[in-house]
Image 1 (spheres, rainbow, N blue to C red):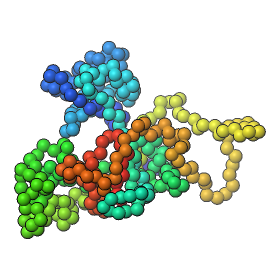
Image 2: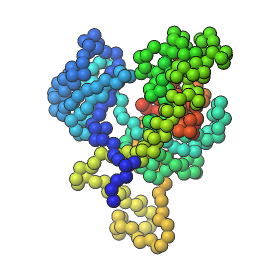
Image 3: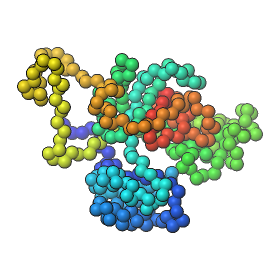
Length: 338
C-alpha cells in the first residue's frame, strides 16, 4: 500500500539544517553575506575534521540556517558546536530543532478571560522519534489518556500587530505601523484618539467599517479558509531519519521478576483472540524521558498575558476562536485554548 498524501514525509533537508541565533555580531561579521558565513564556518569545520556547510540563509528574525552536506555532519557539528560557532559571533548559540505536538483536553486550574476548564497543551520534543511516540500512543495525565497530534503552525491564523496584515508576526515585520482601530499610521491601538467611536472604525486591510481582526473581515475569512486547507493536508507524523543498516534498535527485554526464569527474553507468548493491548505513554515512561527537552521553558496561558497586543502573536484555532499569545520561542511548553 502506498503512502497517503497526508503522510508525505518532511523533506530530508529538515534533518540537515542547523539553526543558529546569531547574537551580537562583530563589526566584521555584521557585513558578511551568507556566502561569507558559509566560508568562515567551513574553514573552522575543516580544521576539526568535520563535513561541510553547503549554504547559509538568514531568516527575518535574524537567525541563520546552515545547510550541512549530510545528517552525520549536522549531528557532529551540533555536538561540537563550541569549536566553531564563535566564528559567527561571541554570543551566537545553537537553536536545536524542536518537534511540537498538541496535547488535547488538558484540565486547567485557571484560565483567565475565557473561563474554560480545559485547554490544549503545546509540548516541544527534542526528536521526531519521541514526538511520534506520543502521537501514536497518547500520553497519560492524571490517570487519563490524552490525544496527541502533530502541531502545524500553518493551520493557525496569524495576524501581524504591526501593520495588521495576515501571515506573519510583528517581530519579523518591517512594514509601517497601522492602528488596529482606525487603520491610520503612526500610533497603536492603545493610543488611538478615535478609540471608542464605533463609527470611526476602519479595517487596515479592506477599509471596511470594522477593526482589523474582525471575523466579518474578508481578509480574516480568506486566512481562515487557508488555515482549513492546511489542516486537511497536514502531516500526521514527523519524518524520522533513516537508521543505517545494521543499527536497528532492538526492543528492550522484559524485567525479570523475583523467582521468575526467562528462557527467551525476546519471544512473546501467543495471545488468545480479542482486541490487542495498546501501550500507553506516561510521563514517567523511561522511553519518553529521553525525548523531552531538558529545562524546557514554561509560559503562562495566553489568556493570562498582560502585555500589549503589539508585542504579541495572535494565533486562532481552526474554529476562529480568537486567542492572543506571546510569540512562541523555539523551546517552550505553553498552553493555548482549543
